[in-house]
Length: 447
Image (cartoon, rainbow, N blue to C red):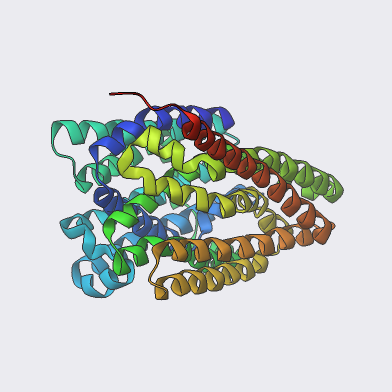
């Protein structure tokens, strides 16, 4: 999984600079809104049951949950069709999707593909087919950027190019997830009695009861800057934020997402055999992620603005400043991603809801305080502060659910992050002053 994510990073570093020199910040803003809306509707549609496909021990329960996920997904796609065609104004205000223009009619298709991709990925996790998931990650990232470049060069540099590339890349991704074999097994799904589906839905009702609301809160409030920066400031600022978010997710995908699915599968096995081994495994995983995460995000914290200016061009300097600020909370988000999977294993899904409510309140309060001040930079700073508080709460509850030394582990983690970020800050401060000193004493050239 890490190998696949690493290849994706290399492709991103090679291709993203070309994308950013073709498309404008306004194009990136429209793409960000489209991606946010489709993923949120897809999340709500399936009530998060696909993420539970790895849990059932019995195959009949697995196939019943699969049938439930597909049925709910069809309802979600139908809902998105109705929303787009009949209630454009209401949902346009809520999601700011009026900025997309005619591209809103691609939303139902985008939702359907997101649902299918989510189901296929979790099916592979259950079967320990991490190779297919890793390959799909590479295909998704590479094809999206290559198609974006092709559309921009051959047709026109517009948001339609980015959104069309996203839809096509999802199609390619789904094709690499082994859906051919899955389709053959769907005949088993249709044999499942609806009574079994209802029984499974009730047995795993903690997913829609606790995990779904928490994920809705988490997803929508995490994307609040995309909606609010567009509404209160300018699309160009939103576009800079979208690019910063896309790039900042690279370390999260390499370290976090690649670890999360493997961690869930292994921790679930250990917990049913030896809970003490699960605690040791969780502690080791946490510290490994902490070490790698602080180095990656510490670098972005210290040199994000310079890096973006050099790699992506002068137009994206603001995105680099955003990335430096966002890196402060992203290191805590990175830690929370894989480790939060233990809630499903320990049966503490309500903790996920508590965390999401805390995050939602802190994020919303933070960004609105910044917006009321009239400064988009303050809005981002307060938004980051809210995220840090929420993810620290999550870290504490993760350790608590495993009956570990929560306060001690959280304190050590915060101290490690503070020290490494301080080192990168001192390094940047020293470099800036050295360059200023050198320029001050550099002799002037005579005409």
